[in-house]
Image (tube, rainbow, N blue to C red):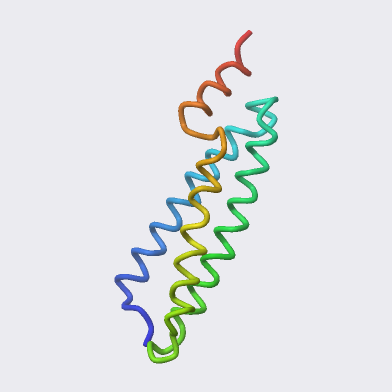
Length: 108
């Protein structure tokens, strides 16, 4: 049984907004804006790859009938999504750090 259209649309909107924010972060860390942010940019790029893989896993699971979604598969899908959070938080890419890095790299 597929998820209801309203829920699917809300999920797509949330994913789009997350992707937009991550893209803005990646842009702010690009060489054009921050010459010393390459390690953070690499982390953000890895985050994008990991997020896409975790979403694919969730989408594949969501296409299965409820009876086919085992506890282990559900837990694994949740764990993959949750695992992305500390990966991102361990970077220096908090909004204030990004603003400071961009400001300092743009200073005359």
